[in-house]
Length: 235
Image 1 (cartoon, helix red, strand yellow):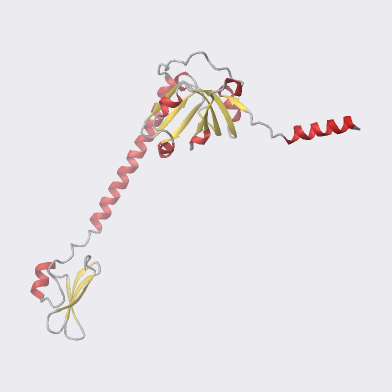
Image 2: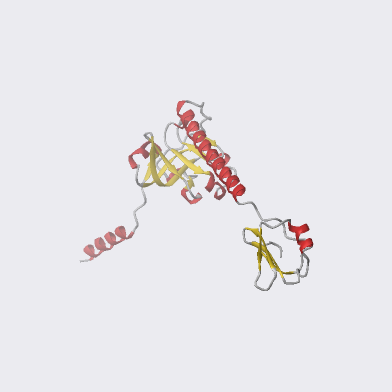
């Protein structure tokens, strides 16, 4: 009976320990495309452009890569290249693929972990840090991808700026607020300040309403003096 109890307790202890997440070497990252995984490898190259920072885990970025987009870069240390180049790292997140090569988009520093204890991972640590690789065809392909994306963003910004200019021309801003116009001013003072109106309407009380367009008008009383004006900023 005592032996059975001991075995039962041992089994409960084993089942109660949560299983460690599998750590996948970068050479096998392609097997996990479409799933979340923890990928481990050494950063051998770093490429930074205005749109992204790319960590390469194989010479010339030929294998698994991790990308930090410019919109997320403020979350990371400013010295990304110095901090991560040559380091053995684990990256956790969804593995995707582009043209047959596995990659991961890193949105937050919590997805990155620098491995400092060689006993914490089955991946052997090299005795020296690999030198920066000589750019090859894969690196040039990646650079062209980023350059094409930069061109698309620049073209989009140009279109937005053009649309803003067009809208500005169609809807010119109202003139600056009157500097001398006030209740009681006569028609001559209004004309000097605002210019001639587009239209003049007769009021029911014998006064006039000068229309300047886009909701702007000046109302005169029967005595020819300003009663109120509307639509002028800074009133």
